Each structure stands twice: as C-alpha cells, then as structure tokens.
Amino acid sequence: MRLKDLRSPADLKDMSYEELNDLATEIREELVTTVAQRGGHLASNLGVVELTLALHRVFDMPRDQIVFDVGHQSYVHKLLTGRYALFHTLRTFGGLSGFPKRAESEYDVFETGHSSTAISAALGLARARDYQGRDHAVVAVVGDGALTGGMCYEALNDAGNAKTKLIVILNDNEMSIAPNVGALSRHLTDLRVSKGWTSTKKKVKHRLRRIPVIGKPLYRLVHWMKDSVKSMFVDEGFFSALGFHYFGPIDGHDLRSMEHTLRLAREFDGPAVIHVLTRKGYGYDKAEEKPEMFHGTPPFYVETGGLRQASALPSFGKIMARELADMAREDSRIVTITAAMPSGTGLSAFQKEFPDRMLDVGIAEEHAVTMAAGLAAGGMKPYFAVYATFFQRGYDQMIHDVCMQRLPVTFLLDRAGLVGEDGATHHGVYDLASLLPVPNMTVLAPRDLNELKAMVRWTQRCDGPCAIRYGRKSVDLGEKYPYEGFIFGKWDLMEDGVDCALLAVGSMVELALETRSLLERKGVRAAVVNCSTVKPMDEDMLRRLSGRPMVTMEEHVLIGGFGSAVSAFCVGEELPGPVLSFGIHDTFVQHGRRDQLLKYLGLEPRQMAGRILSVLKDRKAEKHER
Image (tube, rainbow, N blue to C red):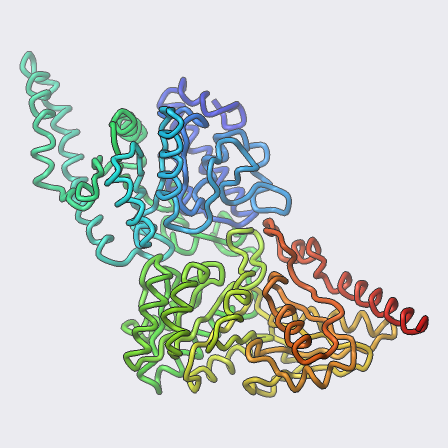
C-alpha cells in the first residue's frame, strides 16, 4: 500500500513486513523532499520512521494516546494519520504545523514544542484515564536528550512511585540537538552494551531451533533464563529504582522487534520504559553524516545537502561568539553556557577556541541560570546564550538567584521576536514582559550586528544582571547609518522629524526607518529613535520627545512590553503618552514566514504608516474643532 492510499493508521495492521519496509522507504523520501522545500526538523524524523510505524500497528490511535516530547519528530505520525495530502504545506502560513497540534487532528492529543514535558503530560493523561475508569494505553515518546532536563525526573519519580500504568519510550540516538552530555548519557551508553546480548540472543535462537528434537526445549530454557543472564550485561538499576520495568535496548529500525516489545509493554500492569536505539538521519546519508546540521534545517538541495538560500550576513549568534572569544583572550573570568544549543546559539565557535570555558548543561535551562549565578558569585563572568523562548523556563531562577543577588550574569537571548515557521511554541515574544519588571535587571536590544558587538563588549563592565535580546534575521544598517558606538542608557536619534516620533526596539528599528520613508512621501516628517537600552529607558529623550505624537514599535507582546513601559513612565511624569503602540496583541501567533506574520499582525511598514497617518489626521481634525 502506498502512502497516499492510507486512510487511517488501522490500514497498517494488515500490511506485511515487506510492504511496511517499502512504506518506510517512501516515508523517508517524502520527508526529505518536503523538508528540502519547506525547511524543518529532518534528522529526528528520519530516525523514528520504524518506531512510529510500530506504534500505530500495536496501539489503536486515537483511543490509545501518544505524546511526543518536543514534538519536532511527529512528521511521520502526521503522514500516517490522514495528513499526507496536506504535508506539502508543512510549516507554511495556514498549513500544517511542524509540531503536534490539537486543532489539526484527533490523533494529536497534546501540544508540545519544548523538551522534557511529555512524561508529565502523559502521566496526567494516564491519571485522567484512571479517574474515569477507562483502560486505554498512554505512551510518551522521549528522546535521550530530553532526560537531561529535570522535569523528566520529577515525572518519572511520580509515575514510578504511584505505579501508574504508563509506557515511556526512550528514543536513544545519542543526540539532543548537540551530542548529549552528562551522567545519564553515560548510563545509556552502558545500557547500549546489551546490544551485544540482543545480537547473541538472535543467533542462539536461530541455531538452537535448528537442532532436532531438543532444540526448541533448549531455547525455551534459555529464554526463561534471559533476565538472569541479561543482568550480567545491563545495569537497569536507574529505571528500576524509579519504579519502572525496563525493556531493551531494542533496535529501533527493526519493526518486528519493536512490535514484539511494544506488545509486551502494553500488557504490563505498571509503568514501563522501552529503551529504543535509533540513528538520527537514518536513510539520508547527508543527515546521517551531519545530524546536528539537519536537526532543524532551512530549505536545502537534496543532492548536495547545501542550503538553498544562505544569508550573506553572519548570524547574530556568530557575531556574539566572536566578540566573546576576543574578550575571553584578555579576561580569564569569562565563561559561556548553553543548554544543548552550541551551534544554534553560535557558541560552537567560542567552544573551538575555549573548550573548557563553554559549558553545555543539556536541556536544563533552570539549572543553567542558577549555575550561572553560582559562577558569578564565585568571581567568574558567565554568559548564558539561549533562545528567548527557552529562557522562559528559567524565569524563577532569573528573579531569585540572579537579580535578587545582583549578580553579573549576562543572558544572550537569541531568536527574540517572531522566529517564523516553528510557530507559537518558539516565538520569543514574552521576554521583555518577564524582564522589565524585575529590579536590578538591565535590558538591551541592538539595532543590528554592529550594535550587538558593542553591547557584548559593554557587558564586561556591567556589574549586575543584563539581558541582550536579538532576532533571528541578521541586519546591518551600517551602510546608510554608520554605527557610532553604544552609550548605556542613551537612545539614538537616527532621523529627526517634527510631526511624530517612532520609538523602535531592536529588530523594529529597520522597519521604523522604512515606515518613516513611507510617511515622508505623504508629507509627514517622522523622527526615528533607536531605543537600544530598553531598561533603564532614556527618560531625558522621552521628555524631549513628549511634545510630538509618539509611536512605540516592538516585536513583542504589547502587554507588559516596551510600549507599556513607555506609557507607564509618561503617566507617572504627567506627560502625553504614545498615540500608538505597535506590537503583538493578546494572541498566540501561528507559524509562517516572518514577513507573512508581520503582515498578519499589522506590523508591515505600509500598514504601520497607514495607521499613523490616520491617527495624525484624526488628531489634526480634533485640534481644528477645538
């Protein structure tokens, strides 16, 4: 049966293993072709093809429930659950999400986008089942990298202690986004030794059964002794101590073995862990060779693996890492931290020169923040580079452990603002609202790559907490607006104009300049202010501009953001507040290209210029009437 002919996962149950292997090949071809066009998470999905097929053959979805940790490896699940015809719309505006989405399908029972959450969610679903007297299976599919996050341990401990019937599939590919780190990774490596036992068992089974008369009884005896013999090869103490029955390791690309083990676990009356060994990028040589590069990839050429559109500018992350490396050569206190994202944040370049001063803590943002506080308290100068959306996970630690003690920790918030095709779980649009109210915190937002360099250099002199937020799109405004240096607490009047003042933060400076050009064509002279120090604000500049209509612009939610802070200051000073605040209203923003999302949110320069003209016209009419 071809992929296009599948009506539901139930169709898989009648297929032969030969047909399933052909289907697996077709699925991989579809994955590579679609992600090459749309971008997305390729390597992780290529690695779970057989695992996902086995899940849908053994379990009866959607009656049985499955939760994917992170969810970026759910593409195969989508293909098998009636979404093949729409798969070409993956990660496009209005199309399929790159993550599980309850509104998309009844087969998506829980939405995930951040790591280490699936076991907690699945345990909640299992308990809901028990309270309601139902008997369906609940499965959490968790990558080994997710187990570097503390939330997994909390959930495992709770589930094992309560003896709740729950299946946790540990998809062990030795990767999270970067190669896994830590003691648990070493433990899983030890467990992989039992692959030798699994291989030996297959050979013994085959040979014993060929012996006339006594072969089968001998095999049954060996099978009965399996657990005792296996304990010589595998230390299962970690999971058994938590109250879980351990199955594995199992070859995740062997459908027969996978199905056999899943059926055993389904019948087990209690919490169970199935340790599955898979290869990230399996079936596409470019992804197998460089799984980290193809974890989350822009569109690429299938034949070469090369990107279709490479940016002419270096990323903000690379510029940050270069500057930190320059600083580290002269300052031995500087140490950098990542939560399993050295490549994504740019710190891999720093790591090459200073391998001992780049700390990868795994997917453990809370720990990273508090450890950074400890480093700072011990006399070091720590820099934690993290995506803005993942920084949300260290909120309490940021307040309690860093800011309350006024420790010199610098947070480098990459992907701040709209990140595009990854969608709602990954947009970094809540960081200002979390940072601005906290005492002792300094918040900076560079207009472009040149200003980021200057800000990073300035943090070397900062004696308290600081956060620098910057977007995904690289920007260099230096050709038309040469950069003249960063002065802490002072905003830059890039263009002057008496009719209104556009106060822009970070990525919105470029859009504010475009908006100004459109207004100028309509005879409106607008000032453009680069509000690079978001906290503390340049209060002197605000007082000087208060005589003209002010408009704030931010790639962030409006509630609690920059515009709110400006309005609050103006109220307190009895000054006229902003006449308009551009930003994101009270909504979760879907996935799509950044330019599409800006238009959807009314943040396109043409749209903003139109609204400004309308407000200025209304104000002029009101003044004339008075």
